Image 1 (cartoon, rainbow, N blue to C red):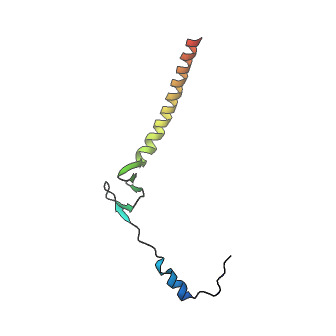
Image 2 (cartoon, rainbow, N blue to C red; image 1 turned 30 degrees about the vertical axis):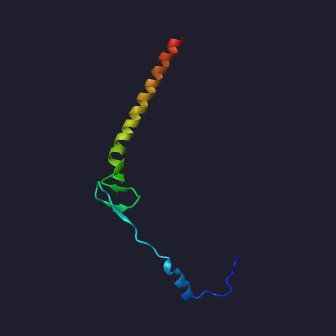
Image 3 (cartoon, helix red, strand yellow; image 1 turned 60 degrees about the vertical axis):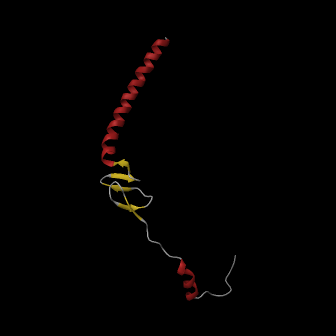
Length: 93
């Protein structure tokens, strides 16, 4: 492991670090909502998640619509699958 021969002074250390700076974050304005957000980041606006001008998630519609739609779709799918299976079984026998 390398070891420094002499202690680096605070001045010399700080001179070396002058080029290591934080940059300002780039801010973009959404062309649909007019909301300011970070580049390449999705942002929430009025309960919807936007990315590149498109709605990714609509929290108001998804929470109510999907839970009701999924449960109804699953039960309908199961009963349809069972009846289809029974009719197929009857034709074979």
